[in-house]
Image (tube, rainbow, N blue to C red; front, side, top):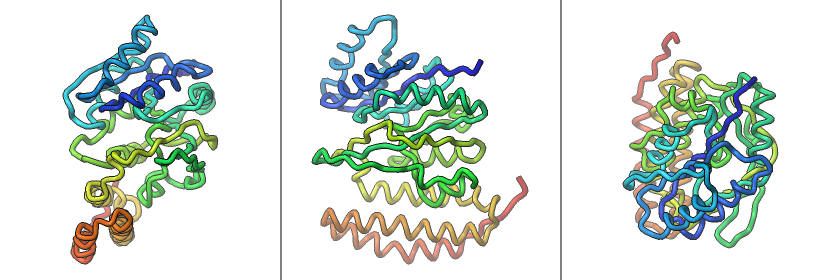
Length: 297
């Protein structure tokens, strides 16, 4: 029988006002996961106290708390993956919320598709004002085409929606802790090289936007997105050839700059926006000089 055991990995850093609601969303599942691993990434607020209250109310080691010095969300998730005892890892950020049928539907999908290593689904995005927007992420994915090439063109996967086989995560080395931002996108691209995905076309999670989130730091995300585009273009060249890979890399460079410029413009950070504009022709020149060799796999 297919092993459908699931460990939930929740990274936490100064989320005392959110983590309780997040844990409640796991405890309110119609079918519970096998364990919940919360990795505190050096919080300086009362997050630990909130988590310990839930641990005391839920005995039998169902909720486990792992503490580490502040090392970033990628390192916290890696630690959770390492200590997890289940076959599958379900990621949940410490300020996001699962809908009650999440684990039940994932377990059914795992049983239905025994050869698949990655499962995901749609979500609701909740903005700072509390407004909900349905995001039909599955519409960006065509299961008739290779996952890697589709993801390289743009990320349509959301971390708190992802359930991945632990062995697949270990095979690719987990999250790259040297990336200050977009560590999740980098990991999905690494997984996409040799794993397949099933999309459940139903929203089973609420992604909560916060003004202090790393996602709002346009400069960090810009630099990391560029690094990811360059790094994974080498593998893309093995699939589509150097010329096509170079043009797709150039496209990604334009997208990275466009996203950063529009975000900084909305934030009225005009000096930083100008710096990004100046860097665009430099990056274009780098791409045109870069040689991407197609090699036999």
